[in-house]
Length: 266
Image (cartoon, rainbow, N blue to C red; front, side, top):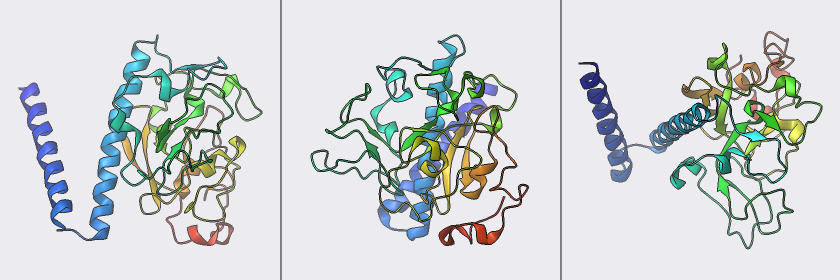
């Protein structure tokens, strides 16, 4: 009986998905409806990523990939097996011609990619995507910085706060390392901007889904996360969820850059 119920529920999702795409094709919804439909597809993609990553940990002694080597092969985008179509959010499928694009960086509606002038580090030329991993979930890190220490790494999804810990999300690069003190970007990420590791929150604070991004958490759940809400998530073991950019931490409306002031507060 339970199996039949699950199959029926799956059939409902399939029918719903087909209906959404038919409306898109026939032009039966406006631009806002099309944006919402693309967000739903993005969430479905991240849900599949969540399954893939959690299955990976099951076969890897409960651990996420090990990034302690310098050859880059521990990066999630190379460490796990996945269908090629999962690399892109439907709101960020644009990749510049590789021979003309010398920048790694994505933007609100642009995917990131590894260009021909890449300096190395084990990155494969031509790799691209719309999503990034929370760098603190890795089992280990090749380069430990002041804000990335062994004590901060989650290593495994089997933790009590799994529903509050981001795993993969919309991003302008393949990995992010947010800190509670990171300032928001002064302008919306309409164009690609070089964002250093130590400003990790700016790599995910992008207006891709109407003032929000899609995120899959360590428990496999997927949902929209408001841009100001990003500062309240539990990014690493020592992360302050009541930091200076949260209401609990005393942030004021005028503290936010103009493009973010009308977004919901958290």
